Image (cartoon, rainbow, N blue to C red; front, side, top):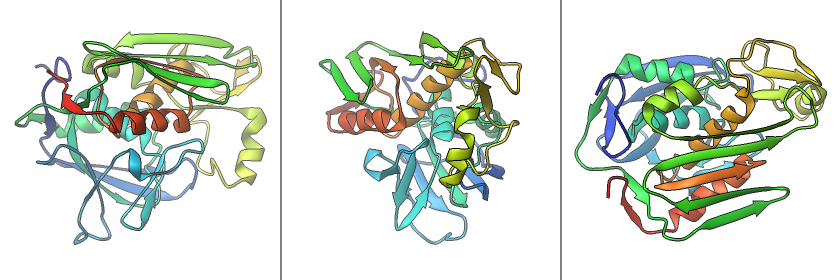
Length: 286
């Protein structure tokens, strides 16, 4: 298979455990995450400081908040900013894993999914019996939220697209889409970093958000220029939106669908994941 699976038709888990540490984007608090193999489909959350507590499966019903990140609540505890890690797992083809955390938030690392991809590569992948469960979409599904919408159409594989519009000239209007595979995810989506607007930084920090944000873990736009170039892609912001979309869809499993989000948000993405969770399940390979 090379380093990554060819597609998403088989179930994979990790060959070994791997850890990463860092600070959370919004809390600014230190956090540590251990990823390890799982014999059960899906992603299972546990806590390094509660080793005897049962692991609980992540899913759309666990979503607890969607303000500038996706936060989950399970077993009386909360964990913020799960989307980049989940995107890395799902994007590389890891369909089942245990995620053990010490801290209130998944570490932001460099603001993209690339450090998580590197961690997964370090651990290695191994196949497991069966095929990943997939929402069985048989008719178009569209959700609206404010000026944004997300739509999913039945398809043979998985194609993701996104569109964004900002008044800031450095961003403007961007559109991007791709047929997703593990190799395409690693090359085209995983390196795209989170971004923000300089004009909103003080307001967000006053609201208790982005306490861990810095110029080495987030792109910051100031009107017609970026404070911390160079960009990894000319359209890095919209690629990061696709990264976020994938991470939120990972809560339900990758659908065989063409999904497009315009002015998407974590609230919109997770609402789609919840709607997909209500559909019958099939295997991605079926």
